[in-house]
Image (cartoon, rainbow, N blue to C red; front, side):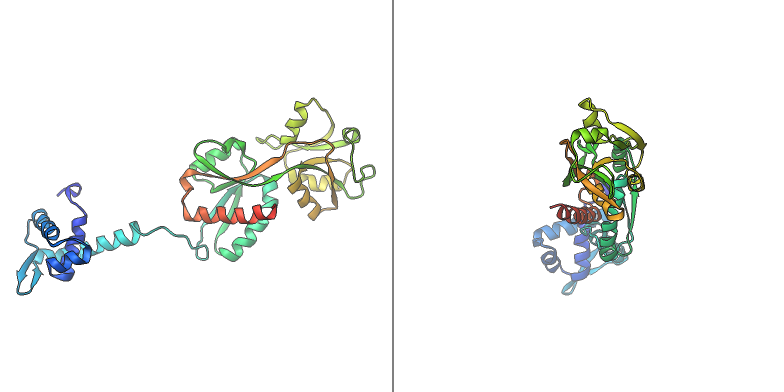
Length: 303
């Protein structure tokens, strides 16, 4: 027998006949008229080359062949209904899934603590993992299913095959140590240019402010170049250097170090921070939950 030639709806007809032992009652149970039900039973008989159900008194009794088929057919129907047709769901309270998020080191210090605190309440058995990827590599990781989300500034992901949701905008500000000897509450462009600067140039990720500055032909005295934003915290705290960073990072530095924020003397581009995901996970219940949590936590925090 070739399964491709079998109308699987006939198994529902068969199961109804086993349960109700009547063409009329079985048809009513599954929503078929008596003529349609009779035609379906006839097709079943032809397929299995067996009468299957024989009129005996007031009911249609199953033949030995039908009795042998009853349990396997019921198993198939239960499997289809319970595992194939069942709408997929996600229970954060019971999941043990590992959620992987691509974000730079700024994101790790800015997003992870709040994400972890929320997950510990809503999904206590879930695990959180972060990955650092260059912007082109982030697309590959999402496409391959290596990561669930990317959170941050990823202009390379604004293309077909990916979804995005804006979380907040962040401007650039300057940070110096609390007792900096020459920087007061305000900073002129002349004084800014005269200071010694620390600059971050992450591998595979251009610094938006650095590009903006270089495009205008402005040159500062760069005394230190770093590859990680969070390395700025001890450097700025223990030197007279100044750094220009996204405002959300500046607030983190102020929270953990003796550092203060000074408005930048030049109007720089605003960075739009988004979360991105691949279309393959667009309707995945677990990914929907994760995206909803990120949106609620970080859009509200910057509203």
